[in-house]
Length: 91
Image (cartoon, rainbow, N blue to C red; front, side, top):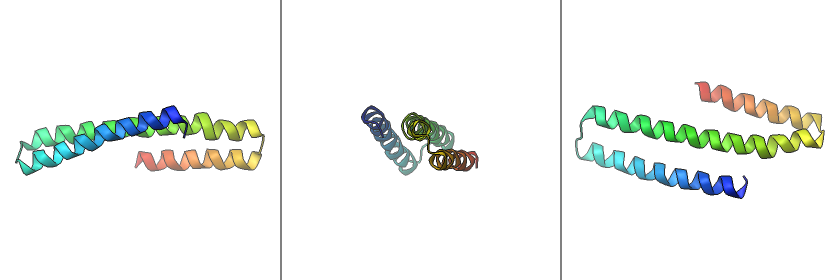
């Protein structure tokens, strides 16, 4: 992972970690269920943004390298990996 992407991803994950701790406190404090569900949705959205950033970096770095290398087997492998991860994300 490129340095700037790694820094950004770690920063986002740190925020998400704080959100999850906040969710645990909400449950411990018997907060209103809809408020908890709203915060759960926010965490899922934040995780999706992290996932997108990691995938974007992967495409810009690993996939681009495979294309530039001219290695057909490596290109096919990278495309297959992307297809697999995108299929799993849809579940």
